[in-house]
Picture 1: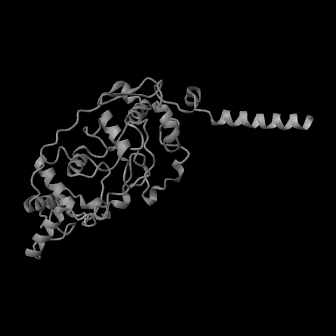
Picture 2: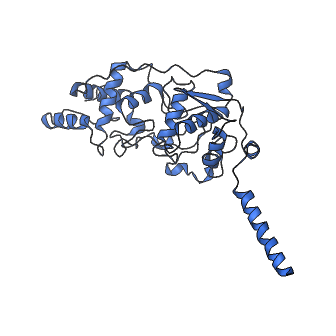
Picture 3: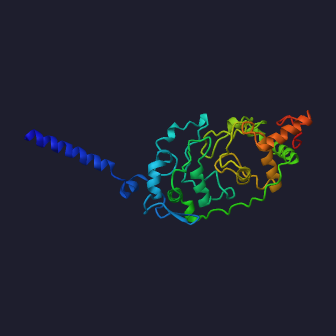
Length: 307
């Protein structure tokens, strides 16, 4: 009888322990582990209002479950998994949310992104990094997570997001546009980082670092099918007109006109030999009928010639 009582007590204790450990996380646990700048941050995405705290599936709950391992409890990119991101192999370190500096934005360089920018970034993920797409989260969960991301930086307490840049209608991708884009690629020395053939192997590529001093690789157009911040011509236009803040990729908004930007977009598409976009077919057809008329891109070409 005594042995039976002992066994029952033992298994009762085990069951109780399992129930405690398997229980849903409470706000006290979240508060203890995650240390944002503020707990009152919200986001506005369409008709949705996101909340960092105080609601079901709050940004803090989502962050604790999926994000803290890389971005850390303070949101500074020093989570326990961050040490395994080897930048020398091309793996970017997790984003430091405290700095409030983001690569993918619709806003001018140096300004905060919009809530929609962050919402889209979470859903899209970042190619060539360890940041996956989180489309599995509901729209409400993503909106809440946007609020949580904002809660780590004091910038949102004193600054407003920038005004999204205006993107004009795309000009036709004619051979004249492509050739002018090629001239701009030479003149603006894009090849120094991206390489003459867009393989990310330019003479400056090995020296590049991000704003934290970590090595960073230029985009390889020849193998890439998606860009850091999207995959369309409009996304590419936006990238070099807003710049990728926190990286060596600057904004060219003050250096080229909108129609020139579209020309550069069209030429950059010709470098995507793995994707084989229509701009590449147009360029190759022209080259076949005009052999020997283009000088190689790089230091040997006269500045601005592109010929």
